[in-house]
Image 1 (cartoon, rainbow, N blue to C red):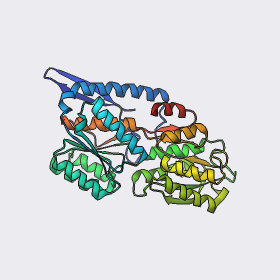
Image 2: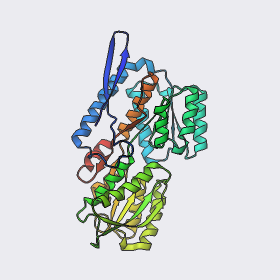
Image 3: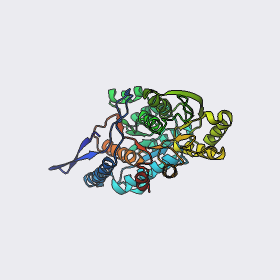
Image 4: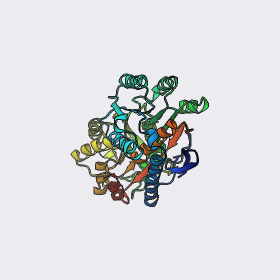
Length: 372
């Protein structure tokens, strides 16, 4: 895991250097995923993050206490983003020293027009930095230009703008950055979890892994990469695959339940694997699987992404084959650190990636303990 180093001036005669746990999951365009993060590495990173937070708070405490942070989340009722924003708010106020009243978090309600209006209000009220989880990542150029004109730096999180937009920030020296995980890695880990089963996902032994894919939003880059690279991990390992169905579930549990229910009715025992772009949809798929009298890890496999507490418990209980920990702790802390760097007038890389962690029965209890 590469370490980013930052020097923070304290007074006129001393300086402080600290390490930040923001690591790359591969450069843009790279298809190979890094090795899975080990338990020892995770503990080391947590200790490093605690040291980092203390260093930041000691170095800039008084300087950020009165700074205002405007945060807009694409919608509050998203399970994963609820975890993310809770940790982000905690980290900004408890660890970095921002006043609670100066950290304002708003609900985009899944409506880009609504969210754009929120951002315009933040700009009018002269917030010092914005942290944005866009409803539509394609809106990034417009939002970036609004913030640039107002002289307000922006940290994009979770939903990644395209490569061209990110490159523009670097080329034009725009104070914008993206903090997230490389979704190719999460998809790869899903495929590996299937390949690592006793029959490599080929339950009926016909030499082909037959699957259905329940996507999030197909326009979202995370959904695109998770869809592509979960299957690619199998084919790269020499497995033949057959897609029975690919359907949009919009990250929603109820929609995924209906999709899985209809697919199980239509395809029956042909379905050997259900890939879900997130755990909320995996929970919905599990309801349909159980209602159809099927049993996960015996006559069907099920994988998701995010490592929601319920999903991780299901991995432990054998009700979900695996998931991938979308590390909201490290992402939220990195986003907070980038906001502070912008406030201090320091240079920030245009992209800051954090690793996913593969979750199987071998480490699920450890991940669950961390989440609790």
